[in-house]
Image (cartoon, rainbow, N blue to C red; front, side):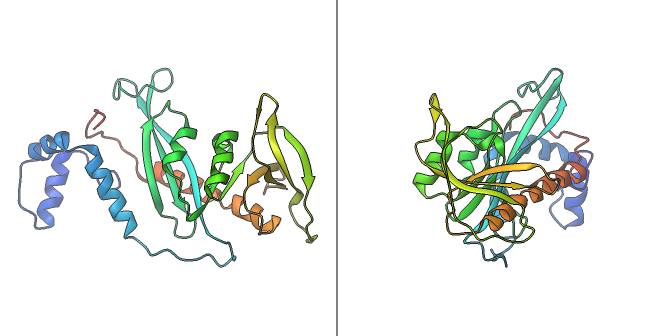
Amino acid sequence: MAASNQWNSYRAGVDHARESDLPQVHYSCFSGKAAKVPFAVFKALFHLLISKCNRKTRRKLAFPKELLLIDSTTMTVGKTRLPWAPYHGERAGIKLHVALQAESLQPLKVSESVGSKHVGPMSETLVHVDYIMVMDRAYGKLERLDRFKEDGQSFIVRLRDNVHLEKPRALRRQKVEDSPVIRDMTCQLGTSQCRSKNRHRIVIFRDFEGREIRVATDLMQVTTEQIAQMYKARWQIEVFFRWIKQQLNIPTLFGTTGN
């Protein structure tokens, strides 16, 4: 709320508390208390809030499960403001890892880390077996895809351009007019030095700008067009991050510790 309304300091919080008929306290009490309350408490309150914002609803596209869009964004400041979170050069940064429900556009899970931490391992904190996870190339580690498949975690993950497709086997599909899909197959991923244990379904299609996209998935009972459509829904989390950076501008940091 402080960021959304661009409060200048804790003093502004005291003014708003008075307007809401809350007991009057000195702003220094807010500052002192905020420094002592563990960040995990505020995080738990945030997750409680978003869990009550909206009931889950089904998409109208007959997808087997709701989509969960996984991605991260980094917010940077001068390194002297957050010396415990070095990022690049003279900048410090905090990385926000988000699992966004595609239907309601509300976060299901949120994790945070210093900006230099790789996004792949953080995705483990965002998995949810009741959803189809949709992720970009940074999350496509082969061992992780094998584990998702073995654990029954549905996924659609874009592959890096240099991932080798080993022993591809084409799947039959009905031709659809004006379909963006180029190929549909199963194969192992990677080279002999690093190869997936399992065969994965690979769908190759063109995006809105005509670029060739390769995604791996465990979904075998949906059409290639649906899989392409599911992955293209990932742009919604980019819009979400853009909104955060535009609307939640934080000109004043209320604290500079990890807490």
